[in-house]
Image (cartoon, rainbow, N blue to C red; front, side):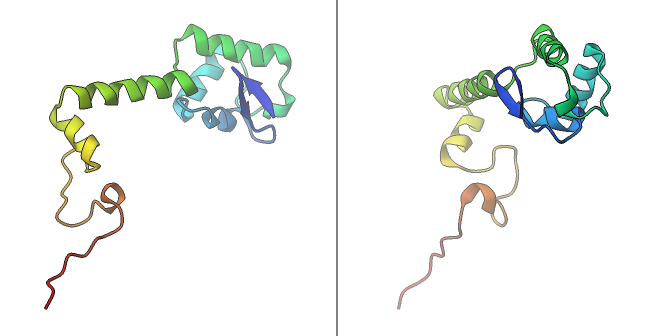
Length: 122
C-alpha cells in the first residue's frame, strides 16, 4: 500500500481511482490533483515512484485541500457551533432528525433509527 500524507491507498488500482480513498478527495478533485502534478491518471498506484507520490502530496498541500483528520475536526467544529447557538439545524442535529427539510411523518428512518411502535393498550 502506498502512503500519501500518512494515509494508505491501494496499490493495484489506477491512481485516479485510489486517491478518493482519502477522506475529503473525490473523483473530480483527484483528477485535478493529478493534472497539476503532471501524472498520468491511468498509472497504477504501485508503479508510481517515490518522487511522484511526494509531488501528489505537495499539490494537495499547495491547493489547501483538507483531508482526513483536519477535515473531520473542522466538520465536527461546525456541527458543535450549530448546536451551541441553538439554531434550527443544530437542534435537528441534536435530536437526530433530518436537517434539510425532509418529511418525517413517513420515511426518515435513516436518521430516526429503527421504528418504535406506539400502540394503545387494552
